[in-house]
Length: 213
Image (cartoon, rainbow, N blue to C red; front, side, top):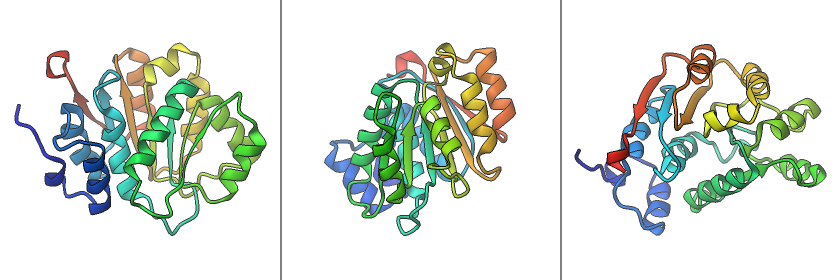
């Protein structure tokens, strides 16, 4: 399997600078397969474990599409736990280091909601959150989704195991029809394929087999 360099992916120079700062030159297998498809706007089902570089696989295409001048929510990443939400938010912030005007906010339960509402009012374009808390904000209208162009379900199988299916369906059901939906999961259960069927448009499946890692 030949390796693909980040600079061969026609990315924004500011993202390439950030990637170089993070010490990466070549893409991981999931990044090499998913990023070109995602940049075309294709819906993706990525089968990949943690530690495969999947955050950058969805984080880079997501940032390519965010308009820093538009101070409205444009991308939502759903994660099973607050730890993962914080970790993903940190990595996306690192990727967006040179993209001035892009705000990334993790939202999760157990953190004061008032503080989150204040940050959301400041024009956050990217939120990474647990389904329960994201839904809570949507109910309160502190998260408005009409400008959302990208949604990512990260560790979708874990979210299902934790009983978040209904919340995920509620959130996905309220997002604009035109959005791009990317889903990453270590396993491909019937329930995962059902979400894909209901909420994705002709998704491409991208797999990383253990031996490629």
